[in-house]
Image 1 (cartoon, helix red, strand yellow):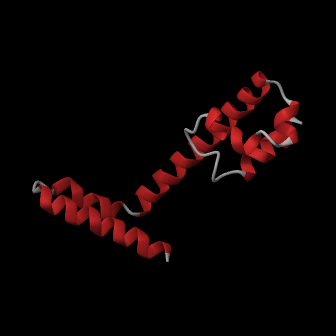
Image 2: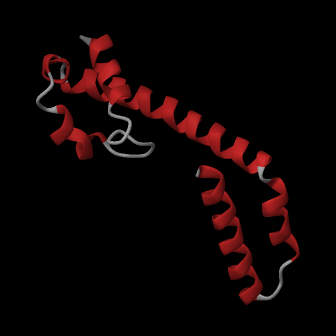
Length: 101
């Protein structure tokens, strides 16, 4: 059942997100057999392990994005005028959204 519960957590990636507490996921998990079959301690232990894994993955993905887009973020280093900062931040957001499309 532990392996099934791990698979369930992976499959619910829109619900089980980095930093989200287990209590906030109960409504999505409570009806699942693998969730009900485990003790509270087992559920929490597996959930915490999963959280560590997805936090590490999110950090890695974020750092990769920063590295890939270093030129976009580098411009912030020289900004002193707040209005330019806001415009530059908007440009970065626009560039990242454009890449998604």
